[in-house]
Image: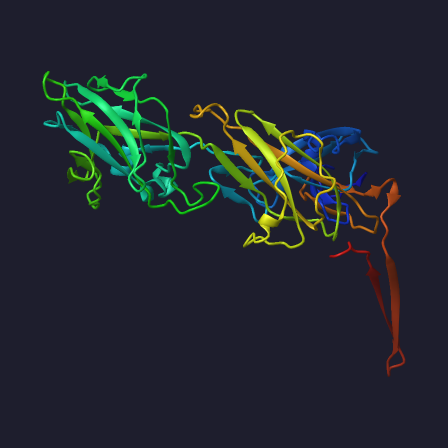
Length: 469
């Protein structure tokens, strides 16, 4: 409730970043009340004013980079927030302690999602196009190498190609007046030998006019470039792939030219084998292959950090979560444990694995008790063997786990905004003033040798704290 303001203040606003009012010290984000998060458990009312959400992206001090902002319009103004105990509402996916991204999951401040592989581009790996036309390649097989360390390089180079289950390749025609005729093409894993053919509008061959390009069809082919390549793990940083294509024989004329890119002058990597891999003649140029686009993986796995309920054996009740832009399935599993094992995850296999497909009121009754709770999210592409190139995959947000709260004395911990236009507010819980514990006032007297009596005043407060703090 608004009590007034400092004489130097230019306003009487109230900014609530987050607060807690439970034995588990479960944080409540102020902006969730306005945004309607929390599946009906975050409701509010206000008097004589207006409630909005203020973006605080310019400050790293604000949880969630937002706050609930109340601007009073008259005296006797205030805000009432309903606090349902007890729950953990996870909505900050880039700041949760212990969060792991496994097999192409991406986190932002507001959600977790499946990550589509990005595009390998020859010009950004090799340098600028030289506008060079290579002749005399008719009837030969060309194998262009794609090295894992390139794909897993610095994001600043903008050629980071991440795990996917489907690929397509962009081939470039010559820069002169010739044409490029490809009779067949494919892609294979050099290390394992597994490969698949590439087709063009369902056919094996394609003719590319000068100055133009041609994309192959999407084909199912696992391309892994980071250390969490699949759900079983494994280091794929040095996997080598090759895109090959057969150039049509020289007759008829004007059908055997190729476009090439030069490697950086300081590099000597073998990029192309003329005559096929591995028996062909090695060169440090890239021919024809301009881009390799990587699609979505079949599965992606996101693993949250732990939340400490501070209760030895909570009675867990429900799991709720929100999935938007449902282009792929997103199922969530709750895991419980009696230890906070952030590093080794050694007790992972001891926890039940039951993925919930529906995001509303999933019963957790009967699950093994545990003080620490976390969750996993499994993203699964279901649109056939070759997932289409979605513009944006499904997004998981607002994961909430409920448990039955014990009864005890708790603190009201609140992070408020300070500034030149904020007011002075008082807080009550269920219309009752906050308990101040025991307050001891003490006065100490001392008579000096000069016959004067001196005194010192002091006070001490004994404040109730949360259990376990």
